[in-house]
Image (cartoon, one colour):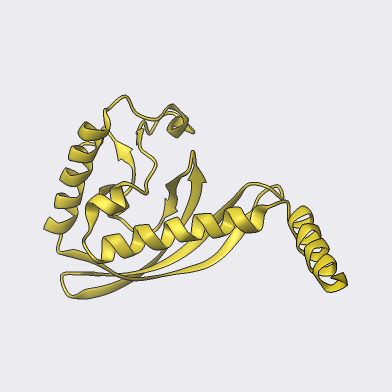
Length: 158
């Protein structure tokens, strides 16, 4: 019985000291794995379900907070059009690795992800950042020139 108390107390202390970020990181990593594996497996409807959708305005900072006025069906249709443009570029995501979580203020965090892609038979490696926003993935800074064809930005010129 004493051992059970020690274990419970240790788990509680770990949770309090970590600010519950451990669990949030695990949840984010699970979504990240689901997203990238869906893109690799060409299960684009599944990838769509993971990304945060927003109307893109290059002149407005943090415009992702406004989301999108598109219905889920309209957004999914637009996402599939984006993916089709992605595929027209003879581009395939081949692999990914979650490298680490970065913290800004001890609470807000994002993950750095290393991706391996192939375009027209040539292999490329890039890094990008992903954070959670309203329970979905927000793909931030990316070195991948075709990231706009697989992220949640709506209202892009295709």
